[in-house]
Length: 230
Image 1: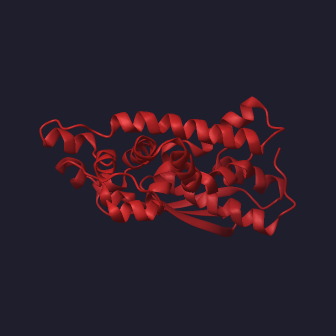
Image 2 (image 1 turned 180 degrees about the horizontal axis):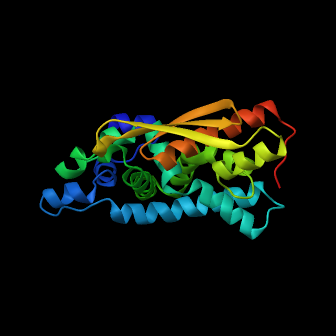
């Protein structure tokens, strides 16, 4: 628990932090002990409010609809699972044997739920200011990225827009997969025309393509800083 606290830059009490990592599969196999689901419920509310306020304050001309789309680009399972992987949260999870065998430590849904539970644990243990600061550390880069996304608020859509606006060629992906069915890893290579722009990995074809598209969009923004999205 102390190692995870250190990584996250918080001081959540060990009992509450352990609870935030307790998946229902582990709880079921250990006599029905409490799970992290109540903390997840609280953390989701804290995350929603903090991201909403940040986007509201930093995008004063954006409409309600656009603000909602930007928020959904940050508060979703894929994005939060990426945050969890950045901090190595998966290695601390308390999982049942079934989830352990089927790669639960790297499942987007479990990782995303755990991030929300940890935010809830921080709120309970340290109060709202510490929880808000944790949210900003965890998803701050995602919030900045959301402002750069196009009308579709999705990197694949934004890549399509950029390719068309800049005449870079049609977007297509070459996807391959390796490993057993329960722990398969997919690699997607994003091409614009005949040019390879980026590659990404994920636990599904869709996730791998989204990662590749995200990297490609960021490269385009670096190479064509004058390109503006509506």
